[in-house]
Length: 463
Ligand SMILES: Nc1ncnc2c1ncn2[C@@H]1O[C@H](COP(=O)(O)OP(=O)(O)OP(=O)(O)O)[C@@H](O)[C@H]1O
Image (cartoon, rainbow, N blue to C red; front, side, top):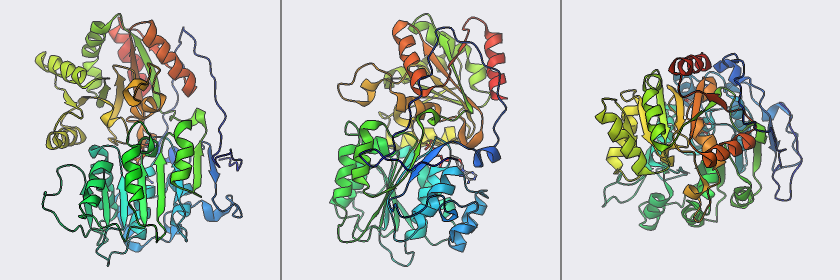
């Protein structure tokens, strides 16, 4: 791994941009060897580390650990890690944990590809820093969706299984309306509900010492959750130091400067732009004739979609509902999930999918980020993600960050996965080319009229 310490004027590393040209004729590349989990643990993707304290040598062994034992974690946490089957830190954990756990606590802006283990890094930090004998909220963690908040909580409870940690959700419809004083130490939720609990004084933040934003670029985006997140932060006490931890697979330029202000003097770990997505995800596209043809192709893919599990992303909620109703009526078993469904229904749908009882989930960007389901080996971009879904008044340029997160629902922690983009006219073709250019990775064509070839290519990609 190479480390560089150069900074731009915001104190953030500026990575070099890869401009691999996209060619209109896309040939298939020879299948690569499957990366194993152990290869991922020792993989050499480039990260750049900038330490808040410039006197410290980042090459010092102190700032990279090869085992969880070296971190000086509490015995109960080591037991929790062992019980989860984590016997060695991943690359990001190896780099981030010594910085996150060192004293005095220092802020962190951490970037690493999807599925590489960022959650464990910030969960271990929360579990290490809270005082279990003090029955007050001490660590707050915000995520962009209730599904992700629930998943993070499951990591907190699994990793903290042998501790006496108490936890509480700050997600819609969780606490009874007349709930009073939260005494749990770790609170995980979404920003609107977290703010609501703080305003109603149900959540006393006077003892908070760790504040985590997962999917931080999304949480800080002024066009998205940025206002609410900032409100939460501004309501935290100023008299005690609070360690602010930001993690994401993406930090687009427009959020970077704000992230540095939000988490001042942070240690920073950053990916090179050509490393934004992992190589274990093979990316394909299918040239459909029109919108209706997209539906036909999806139906013809059904057998392949159900070999493992798959997630189909659409632009609109009504498209997700329409496709799932049509496919269900035609005898296929699919589920749909989006933000218009009520909380308990959303929980039931994602739980069924997580347990493998549903194999195909049709959804919107609501679960594009963070969701970790190992068996998902296929992601279909039925509609490509566009900026105007994320940014008020945004245009029809492709939303590169959301694309990276969507395809990152597969190929997790060294596993193989494939993504398929449906393009159906010149506009969507050009949008896909822009994605290909931005990522510097080839997107290969699969013929839509040759089912056998389609199947052979996909199976080969997953081998
Ligand atoms: N050290 C480890 N050993 C074994 N498995 C691990 C280890 N660290 C993480 N994992 C597993 O890897 C998977 C991906 O981890 P995680 O969800 O934290 O990824 P992430 O980097 O947060 O991804 P995303 O950017 O999509 O949110 C999880 O199933 C997790 O249990």
